[in-house]
Amino acid sequence: KAAALDAASSASSAVATLNESQIGKMANAFIDASHSKKQESEADTYSYDFMKANKYDVVGAYTAFRKLALLSEGSHQSGFEKMFNSHPDSEKRAQAIKKRAEKDGLWKDPGTVSIPTTKLTK
Image 1 (cartoon, one colour):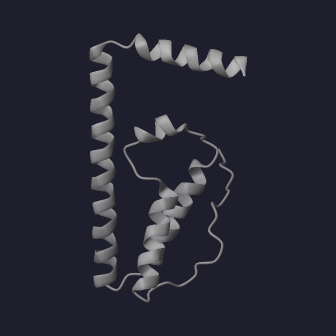
Image 2 (tube, one colour; image 1 turned 180 degrees about the horizontal axis):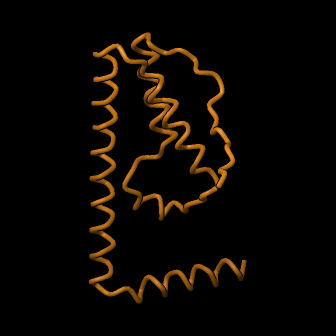
C-alpha cells in the first residue's frame, strides 16, 4: 500500500511540474492523433467500399490488418501512449472489416492468419 501511495505521489508531482507550454503540446498531440485516427477510419471505409464495388475480396483487408496486429504484439504500450497513436488499433480495424463483410454477406473465413517467417540470406 505504501508503495502505491509513493507511486501516486510521484506521478502527481511530475504532472504538477509540467508547464503550460508542455501541457499545450500534449493537448495538441492528442488532438492531432485523434484527427489522424478519424482520417484512417474514413480511409478504411473508403477502401472497403472500393473493394466491394470493384469485386475485390474484402477479406484481404481483414487479413492485412490481422497481420499488422500480429506484428505489433508484444509492444506493450500503456493506455497513455495509445491515446497519442496516429492510427487506430489494427485488431479493431480487422474486426470492423469482418463485421461489415459478415453484414454484406461477403465474409469467407481466411483460416489462421499468421506472419510467414523467412530467413534473410546474404
